[in-house]
Figure 1: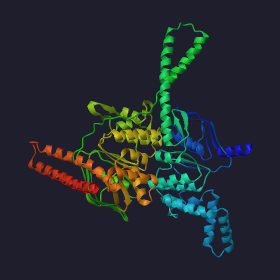
Figure 2: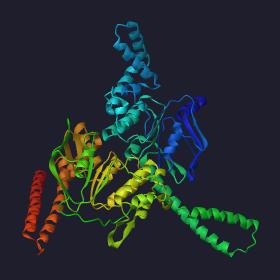
Figure 3: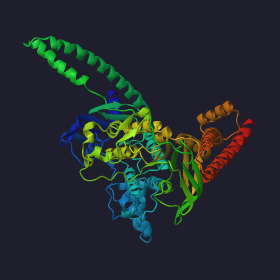
Length: 632
């Protein structure tokens, strides 16, 4: 009985991979030293660290693309391992189908042989043999799943050449290949990059259902929350393990940092006491005092340690926006059979915070290019206010000159950001806030990691002090620490904000409403963040869970309303929009007191004022409609 119990426990803790005392340096840059951890069966581990501290290097070592300077990486014998890298290496000459079958998975070979047998029905013997192999390997179930995976990842054109795929399609193909290998251990580098929201949620459900051991680097915090059961963090050269999901990690990390701060305070007091003692000592030292001196130097090293996490708390003094910001009038845009916009109308308000979501290929980036006038509409017009200054972060990234230093790149775009009360934040200080220390600022850009380059690009956009910020997939390749800094900055940002992102946690934190791109020119304005939208969609698409039913009952009881969920959101939004319009009306009315106005100026002001008053009337009418419905 004891043997059976020990055997069961051993199976439960089956070791797949052991990393022993690995170290890595590049020239003078010491990334990490003497790191050790292990991966066991059924663990779903997320590896968390700042950009540039060695995440990619560790993944490359696990995959065999790189080797540690010292230490060992030991895999359990005969386990099947699959890797998903940021830049998949797939033969460009193959079709999608050939690339999938170009693996060592025996079940895929069985399916391939069966499909060949179906093409030659006259060879009854070959067909019978292929059919029997399908039965033996239970390949029917696998074939169904294989088709589902390709469908979910939008890889249904099996005859398409790999060379013609976009970067995102290649990454999805590499993910499909990795999943279909059915590995014992799957190692993933940013698996949610290049997936739309629907795909990400499908992948979460897939990993919840499949008994697969995972080790991943991801910045997607909802994915971390729902998929991972353990987090390993590399922080200032030390590894910390948290046996729980992202919420648990945040809670325990905060407690750890608080404890470290207390210990640091005690160490500083001890350092001060020992410093006083050192000053009073005679020049001749005894053995006992020498030991105490050694301890003193150790304490001094600990006492001088500083955490490098920065919180952004800025009162930005950006250029004030006028009453006209950005207007789209009957705007249409299409590419052959793909309609992006179809007679689209919208007026942006001051301080608006918009998130844009939708499947890949529905026109999200095209919409951003239209409003920033880097592309032109087929019809309709886009009117930009005179005081609007765009800051546009695109997916293309940053272009730098050879041998250019980090600080020189940002200074090309600006020297400082003005703050209120005459203060300012310099280019150097902005870089520090986004985790580039003084030494790193004088590194050559070519030495930066992919994530650090994205972080630098973000700083070049922000240093220009825009009052209308547009971010197209800003979270790709950024680490969680940087995302927290960016979120804090955006929460302080007083201008207009548009974000296209598949990062649901990020969207929930920084936007107030969504444009949902449904495809073929259908765009819905949803009054809420992503979690609100998901809740609403789920309630429409399927029977609500017991919890959501309780929430709806409670909401009805509190509001005594007959409004739908979406109407209630619209009603709440109308009040804030009416307040904003009233402010614009008052501002315009004050301008009429200017004695220097020409008749032409007065006519233009009158036209603007009439538009604002018309919009107030329209929104008030809708507000009264919803109010009457609520009271009824």
